[in-house]
Image (cartoon, rainbow, N blue to C red; front, side):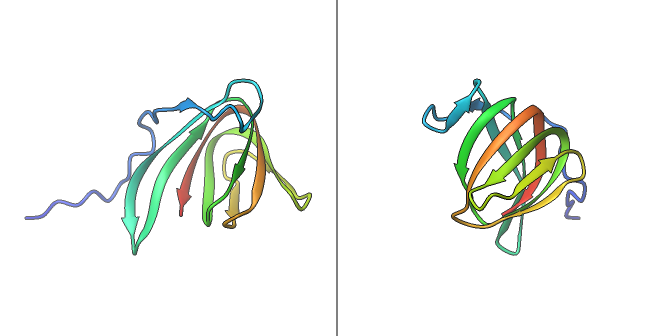
Length: 110
């Protein structure tokens, strides 16, 4: 009988590494991700970023914040406060600035 994991482990450690110095605006943030599953050609995973400020260019993604706090700002001026339960849509090519006050852990679908 084939056993399938129905419950995805979002609590296991996500290995992080320092961000590219060219992307860091403040502090010494680290980030990392761990894939959990592939569904219809789309990746589902866990991503984490430690406190600090960094810029990024996004991919198509929807995410839900599990823990932590911060803000993500977009070049068009929109700013989204992040905390547990926040659900956000990112679009490919968007330029963002992430300000993380408390390590953010999110589930992403990209």
